[in-house]
Length: 132
Length: 44
Image (cartoon, rainbow over all chains, first blue to last red):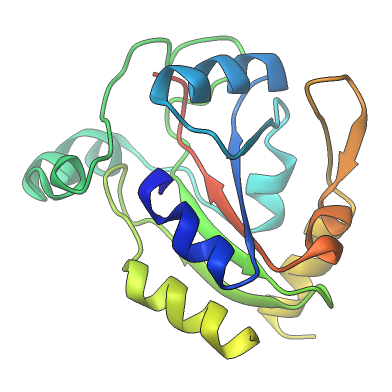
């Protein structure tokens, strides 16, 4: 998403990364990835639950991403397991993307089907364009 | 209430700490401008 940040901001929106763990941990992690947008930690994973992001199983965490090949890696995403067993980290938590407008309406919710599943960026842009 | 509005209602009150230790409510974030939340799976 780092590379899409400019396009998102050009549409008047902001990009916020939410990671499991404390904000300090999240910032260290995001800095290591070169993420320059806001990076917040949610050690209780309340936001994940609020948006209904599910936990997966071994299939969604290991098998499906392998089957999906390196699509995510080709798009610049990093896959790794280092530090995934930290205290605040739920190894089975699946990722996702949510877009909320200024009035607090959830305009888009993408619940990743497996650990390497990403939303089509064109869909994200289309939602943001509709909010202009 | 449909699921989308229910989800944003639940998320509105979620609070996390920023790097200075100040609480940040999710609803404060999106009240600034439309917000794309990228939920990461884990560290590493």
